[in-house]
Figure 1 (spheres, rainbow, N blue to C red):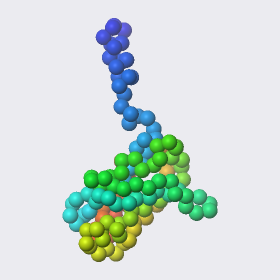
Figure 2 (spheres, rainbow, N blue to C red):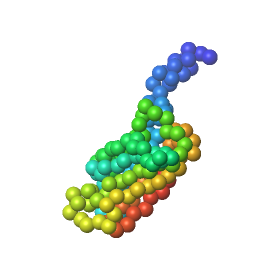
Figure 3 (cartoon, one colour):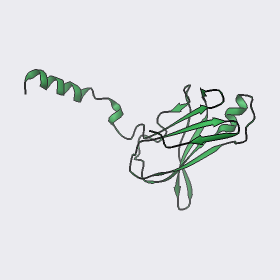
Figure 4 (cartoon, one colour):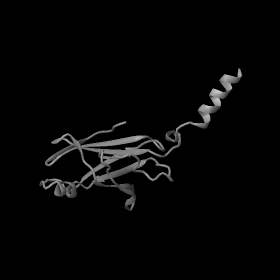
Length: 136
């Protein structure tokens, strides 16, 4: 291998982006208001894991100006397989917007099948309905 190739490989290893260090960004969420087409900012979101005795609180956060939480799962722990629940506190969001809403919160239950599986949970929201899916 010549000297230029060696330097290129070394620089790639030294400057590799932090995104490759799991589990940062293991679970992200996004809320889009379908009525306005605008992201829903400042929405409280909680994350829990199902145990035999009930639900254990793991994390909570608030959506940013783009309606996202880029890394909801705690970065100092591995996300193990199991059943989880993300709850979007939508009632407070609609009150701030001076709108009524049928759903005070939207719980989304999902199954993790692999340790540190990268998951994204988008919520398409309106005052009287919502939809969600497994994103990437």
